[in-house]
Image (tube, rainbow, N blue to C red; front, side, top):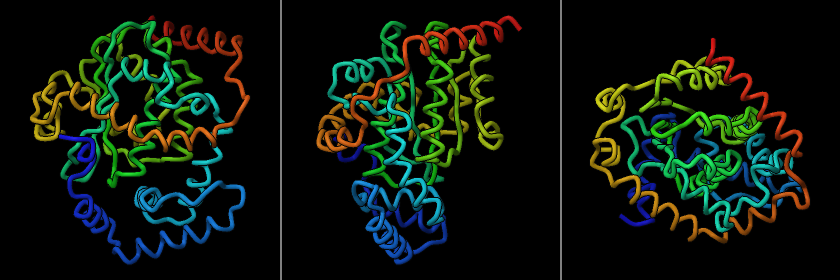
Length: 308
């Protein structure tokens, strides 16, 4: 496997299948892409017209609702000033971003499910809690998304959270503020259609964390959350031909896929150089006092939930 086949080996065929699922034609797709391009020409506050693949993917994810597309494409640019913590100094080549990339696995799997969903596995790679920085983790995940919106075509997303090695000290770093910021970007910009969220290797003591996450999700998403006690349960939802060897599958291992994704981020340096020009300059992240207050609030709530 090489970097070029990380997302698609036959993108044209997949796009045709996705359009069939949405009851749309190639002609409609091309027409709507052009409509969005024409709209962008009059949006002087936006820096550039996105590439065709970004426009196509936003159309597909938003079921060809042009008004939703326009709003979320505008948010794609403006959100960087609203939530600078996730965008300022988050270039993949920076030392702290290279560090988080070696601390976590965020791996979109090469093969789609039969329902044309892209499966992404998230797992700790380095178990040292000191190396886990929440905002950098979320920023790294969005750096992966930046590649996907330029190259991918899918109908929905499926997330697998492997909780092996997760400690309370990791969860305490997932402060409410950081989670809310990441959730805001998802809702206002990408709004991906989630087919399922799967947890595996979840210690009983961490079930409270899943319950906390559920409170931040819409009801229809909460119904799509699954907790698996073993690989056999996971295989009932995701076939072994899609999953890495680490999960009893036939796909390349997490380490092999991780190395390819790191190389892919490096190969797209020009993309992130450009995105850096969109990030607000001289804008600081949360103050230290806000940071500590946020962390204390989360720890208090989390410990309270554990006791209850």
